[in-house]
Image (cartoon, rainbow, N blue to C red; front, side):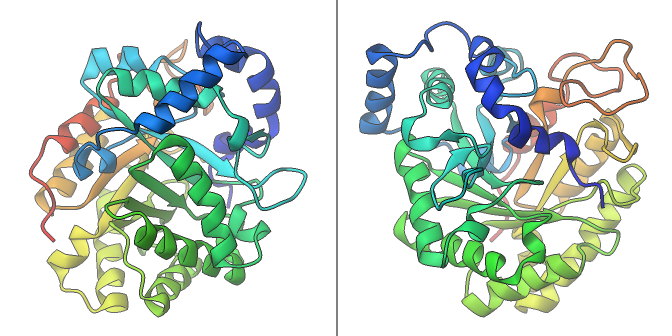
Length: 355
C-alpha cells in the first residue's frame, strides 16, 4: 500500500533541509553556537508546565525542519492551537540504536527542533513527539530489545522534557513482529518510568477498522499488559471516500478494541483515536472541511480520546487550490490558512473523554 509517501520525504531530504532551507525556515536565533546551546540547556533544566491531556490528544502533526515548515507561533496566534505533534524520530540512517530526527540529525546535538519547541512553550503551548511514521528505519527495528529501545526514546523525553509521546507504527515496521514487540515494550517502560506521560499509539486504518498487522499490534499490547491513552487509526489511503467511510472504520475499530481487550463500547471509545489527512490523500481521496466536521462530531459525541491530522505543513491552500496532486506543503482543497487546525482546537475544548 502506498501509505504516507509524503511523510517519508523527511528520511530522504532532512539532511539537506537541516543544513540549508530547513534552518532558515525556522527563523532567526538558530545559528550554531553557545547562545543556542545554552537556550536548549535552559529548556531542559527548567522543564515545562503540562497542558491537559485533551490538548496533547488534539495536537496536529508538524514537520519542524522539512516540507516548508510553517511558523508555529503564527498558527497559535491565528487559531488558539496550543499543542503540536512533531515528526519523526527514527534510527540513524547509518545504523545504531540512538534517536535522530528523520534518520539524519542526532537528538543529542539538536538545537534546531529545540528552538522550535522553545518558541511554542514561550507562548504557553507544548509539544508531543512522534516516533516512526512511514518509511525509514525505526528504533524498534534497530535496537536489540524493548529496554534498549526505551532507553533511546528516554533520551528524547529527557532532552525536550516531554509530557507526551506518539508511537506511529506503520509500514514497514509494523510487519516486523520483533520490532513491534520492542516498540510496545518500550512504550510500557516509558509509561512506567515517566508518571503522567501521555502515550498514543497510531497505526493504519482500513474499512474494517485496522488490518491484520494492526490487530497483531493490539494483541502484542494485550500480551504485554500495556494500555496507552489511546490507539488511533489513520482512515485514509485505503479506499476511503469522505467522512462516512471514516466514521464506519472508527465504529469497526471500536469493535476490535472491545474484542481484544474485553472493554465495553464506552471504554473502547475512551481509548480510541482518529488521525486523519487534511485535503487530498496520497491515493487521491479527498477529505474536506465538511468531512472533518462530521468526524469531529462523531469523535466528540462518542467521547473518543484523540482527534488529530497530518499535517499542519499541509494546512494551507495550494495554487491553484486543487492541482490534481498530493503535496506535503498544501492541502489541494480550497481553504484559508490553518483552517483544519481549528477542528483540533474545537476538540481540545470539548468535555474530556470518559474513562
